[in-house]
Image 1 (tube, one colour):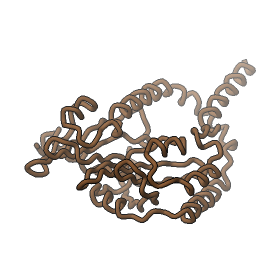
Image 2 (tube, helix red, strand yellow):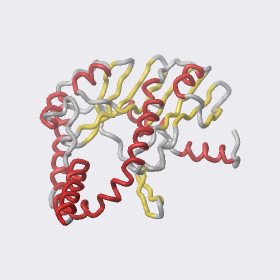
Image 3 (cartoon, helix red, strand yellow):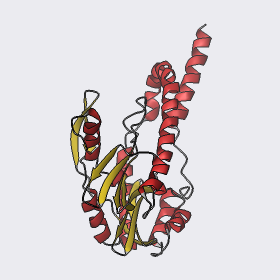
Image 4 (cartoon, one colour):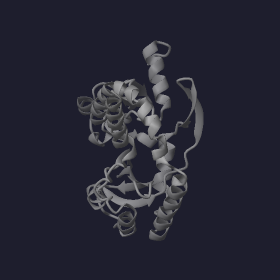
Length: 288
């Protein structure tokens, strides 16, 4: 009987080691992480397309904004690197890369989640942040190398003193609880992946009509008339309750003027205050 318990504990330990202790494999283009990203980023040609950028880096970009301003179409994506860990914004004008930029400073505020304090980024004005990015200077190759060196030093400091194997007994003790929740979490992650695919902001293009956008993401959760010929629509969905707060939902705000998409904001550029307005509208405290 004791041998059976030992086998069971060993198996549970292996499950936890595979789930938590083994580092995830780097994505395509990241097998040489720091060295490869330096070579690519410092020699990246301005004028390259987004498709070319993805091909060069092997990294999937995170949509930030698209906007039609005058005769120019702007778009911005965020790319994150695993080793060293850090991110840059890549700004495009009329489909061509113009600048690589630092992410803007993020201000935080403290809120309560499940009775505990939780630091979250303050809401942003997407229009103000977008203009700041459009006007920002391009990072030089020297500055890019400096950023990568800073990330490497910060990662080295953060990793000091970490001894993951010392918490193996805790993994073993909590294994039955984790395994009991695993089916629920797996179901939640499957649903989250479906919602992320459905509300993918890359699917929405400048110039689309409201009906064309509706065919992709269904009806908006909020519609706000901004002036006589423009309105803002918000699309998205809360993620399953079984998922951690660490997994953010995808919310997309789209501005239509004369029934055509003129801007799309998501992720770092989504104004979360719109969700409060949407909630008030649904509860009847505030009607459109």
